[in-house]
Length: 329
Image (tube, rainbow, N blue to C red; front, top):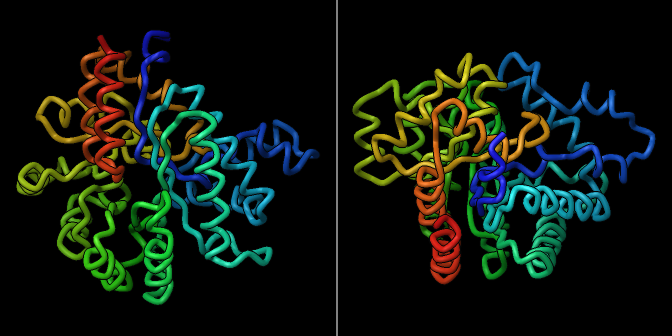
């Protein structure tokens, strides 16, 4: 493993809070759980598809239903960021998934937002939040989520996403929410081109009009789509190990990350679900170094692209890009 990559400052744009429950954090919430049970129930490296991957997240959500639990989870992901030398991140979560023990959606966002601001101040890691609607949600639930973003827009809640089972549910219920996001100047990203092919990305771009696509790897199957991505400077949030775990690709050598980089697409390198994929950002960088011979210059370019595509305020973008440039010399 190349420790030089471990020490590099990093930007992460695509990481799900409910997919990053570490054993250390879970042990604080449920002291009785064994490491064997943790590996069996929460790590999804034996998944057969995206649906299996999501089931692991469902199990983790059982331990993210109170203020005390959410505080532990946020503290834990900051520890993970620190270990990876992440200097800017955007954490995403679906507020409506955390209501099983009496919290209201507004309280969920407030708890996570406050704890994130507190940890950002104490660690120096700049972190913003993206709220997710889910493919199987109703139009009402999607609109409720976008209105939460509007309510917290002065804080660190900066964007809107649609996630979950891309193959099982159409976009129709979510068009109005994305339209409202656009009218409200809320940044948007959308999961697409992961479980489904290039047409999923095309449909998302046409109906939802996001500036970023979560995953989007299967865009490479359609030349006209690639042209559209380039012309509109659509950023792709890539998650290599996740794509192997969910069987989008059989092996790293099949992954189009190198093609996308070499052809000047705007891309970022991300973990997606750190626990479910049994990965971290240091591992992802070392995979790229091993399989594609990436060196520091590759990572500098990708991190600058990531920051430029981020939903951060312009002064934060300038600060982080300057820090990246000085650190990669």
